[in-house]
Length: 104
Image (cartoon, rainbow, N blue to C red; front, side):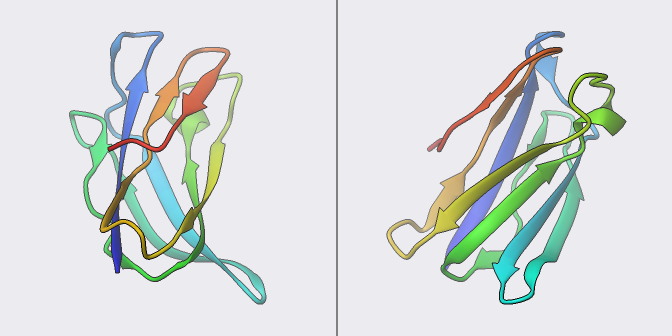
């Protein structure tokens, strides 16, 4: 099984995104099933979404509720396989752009 963490950095402020809501869903036969939700801590992190089976997952970052007026939310879809014990999926958020990558 694989564990998952994320880290959100607000590049417009040059600081971690504290208090952003993040939802984790897994894709199933009937669509997306939400399996976890959390808020980023003072360092912009959610360290543990629990153990994940192989499959297709989606992180939804509630960027609009956080204060980003251009992007109301950011969705990141990724695959969990058995090759890694841990996945880290960070989000770098600016006022008019964002990027994500598979971290370490």
